Length: 253
View 1 (cartoon, rainbow, N blue to C red):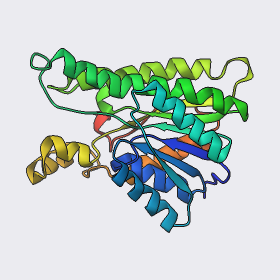
View 2 (view 1 turned 180 degrees about the horizontal axis):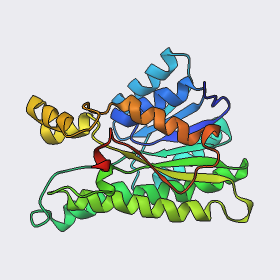
View 3 (view 1 turned 90 degrees about the horizontal axis):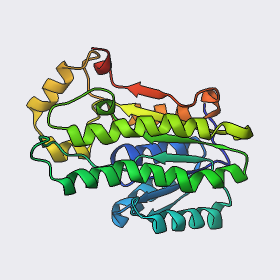
View 4 (view 1 turned 45 degrees about the vertical axis):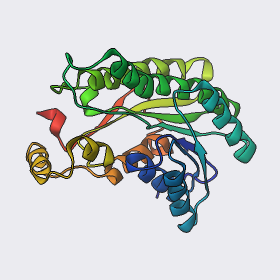
């Protein structure tokens, strides 16, 4: 079993969906968790689930678009654990809307939430990882950052930007003897609160998406969390600057 004992991980967007499950999976492997998000009540549920399973976690209420919040999160991490080994940049926003109907304000919201937050996370976490000899970062993109989808130009552009930024950052993070690995997690269709917010609990939509997936099922949050566990573990010690696609085969079509 993957051992993350004595490792410390920040996971953004940890109040639900992939983020919450990722916190739980990393904690079961032994990592100490800083779970961040905007909803304090839901964040505390994440922390409680981890503690109930014997893990260690704290919640930090964070706006991932705020430099001040990132600095405060780093300070909290160092005060409580004196190190940082893992960052999962998972927080993000999503909507379905045609390009013509998308306002500049809506576009900028996705850029800020999806791209700028990923940049800030790496910017402020990498120096702390360097202090203890290295670490691993996973930036969560989407299959829509690799392939197109109608009525999702804004979202596709931001998720594609994450892939490009990760490749560049991974090269920087390996220069001059640095030992920080950075990879992109590329989920396919994962039935989470984010998708339900856009499509509702429509069984016909679920059936359509299932039929369009070669493995004939939708992904779940454990599928992604377990892949992230691999990317932050020693099992992937020679993996950096790449995209790991977990999509049931949709992108192969």
